[in-house]
Length: 124
Length: 278
Ligand SMILES: [Fe+2]
Image (tube, rainbow over all chains, first blue to last red; front, side, top):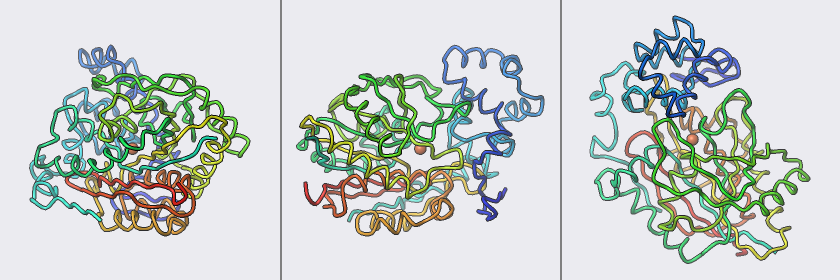
């Protein structure tokens, strides 16, 4: 997905603008709440019930249920809070990233410099 | 009179904290990062600063978009660790320096910087991911956290961060106590954490940034956010915070150490300066 930032697109990038922050406010507020351990427990015990109490729409709750991180970013979610949702449901950032790229976890990991035996190090 | 005795710029990342907590210091993927920090650690051990001023950003652990400060200054004597969503790490609270912090607040506001003044400031991986790599002490000196918005646009400009660094220097130099102050700025070098470009890194750009930061920071000051996002990935725009550290050191710097490593998702950069007049 490409979005424009002040009229200029950056390929593959959704800049977190005020408009996006407004659009994703409910999702992001729900995600931020998971920094509280008791709320993480409540969410894990009953995902739908907890999200309902946060006022998420059905469509937003479906995105979380499907672990559709790409969809959540498109809906205004900010990655720095979405990783708190990922953490609560047992997905790390690498797994979330693979989903956003439409790749399997293994496919994505194979593209990493460390996996290719070519991690870039420079000393000077 | 207090004075600035050194500066550190480095990438912060949850992955660094994670590798540290899991004891991966000698793991083949992680060892180059930890080895790269050794000279900085030895330098800091000798330097023994009395105070650390850290320019960094919070990742929705202290602040949320309900009221998101463009700049925020922690002014208490203690800064507890934030729970980022997966439990707290085994680290003690950071000590602060309320007296210096309030002086900094006064001086910055008189200098036309207007941070939100925070008597409660929990800190996240923006500071705590890298501090354990810079020192074995828990902790080496009181730390004054200065958080900036580099997440929700509009962001402060690169030039603003440069001016911020100059204002921090004026604040330090107008403090009556003889403190030796270290300025740290953190922020991930190239990385993008969302969308089709997830995982993008640009080591050539990161190293050009390190060159320019040392020799010609005005070139970096004159770039737009858009340039940073395009060259380094959207989330790498937080590199602009390093400009505050650079400016705080004065016009000419002596580079003590530099290291760069990009194994996985984020360019891990590290640069250590002393002011040429130090
Ligand atoms: Fe960051």
